[in-house]
Length: 224
Image (cartoon, rainbow, N blue to C red; front, side):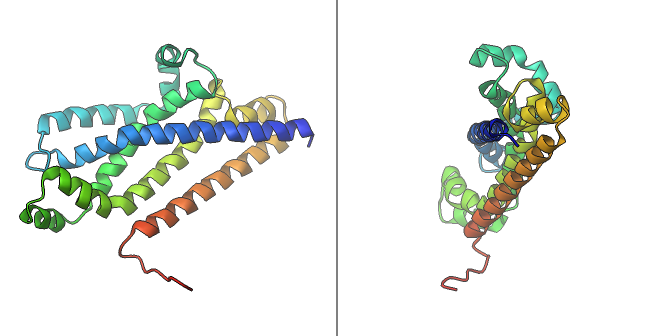
């Protein structure tokens, strides 16, 4: 393999990491609070706002139901308005974030709802406010599940980042399509697949390790 191709692989990998990293961060900043609100705002819950909950839940469901490749194409005018272009790595972050935020919201909501309701009642009995319960009880107790959910979201974003390569999004997907497929270079396609598998494995292992550190029930073998 030529030095030029190695350089292209390196640059494409960095582009993929940039797209996935920024989209995951912004998607978490949007989807995290949204998921917490959805998990605590049904009728009779801590932040009871059933009407708002239903509306936001509907919006989240609609956003999640749109196939990603259709989402990428359909929001091209919005992407161009927001970042000034519809191609390149920065432009690809827009649809990646829009796809990630509702997905993360539902994952966070599920993790929050799995917390034992007895802990909420105990905190209420001690006079904690709803926001104190969310911040000091629900989020810490749900953190292992939230971390695993975010891990799943990042893994999905890695796959989505390959799709945006088909519409000028750069990254490993673009490299695999332009060289591996269009120029009949199967070795390049194979290397792209291997790199993406390694990235997924690394993210999954890191997420599981972090989740275990937050899990109070997990045994800790310190000093061994």
